[in-house]
Length: 213
Image (tube, rainbow, N blue to C red; front, side, top):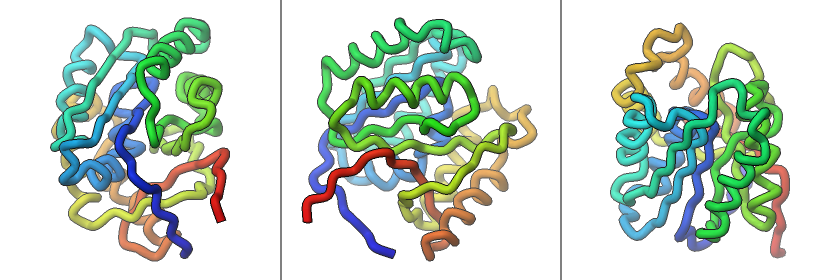
């Protein structure tokens, strides 16, 4: 499979509707990208969960997933499941982030996600980050909306298992969900690895990419 390397990533934006979305969708890639990169600048905007135990979980989790980089994390309090009713305010929150940073890479939800909050965020991101590389992560969940991704990040076995361990460690509020376990996370990572000839991988959707041949 053809491999393209993104040159000189110095600044990364992480955008999510809910706490744990980033860790589920891109945790392995964050562990890979941030390893040994204390100089990497990471800005995270999470739109829901602010002021609850979920915010504490998210801050602790992203500190581990992004180490040794020290992420700047903003967690807002938009209501879970009703974010589309707050469309303007959500867009303004993203625009405020864009006004402060010019990232080399953006992690965000993708448009075909069936959760209404994720889907709305995915639709707004390219309106705000218009000339940026956006990797749309996939979130394993009940809705059954996994589609065929177009971009893969190989994960070492150590990284895949570390991701699963951190998901279990940092999000105890989610342990009651029947799909939230190590088998599920490693199972999807194994499937994506099969699709690009490695043991494990994470996969992303890319809407627009400019080549320089």
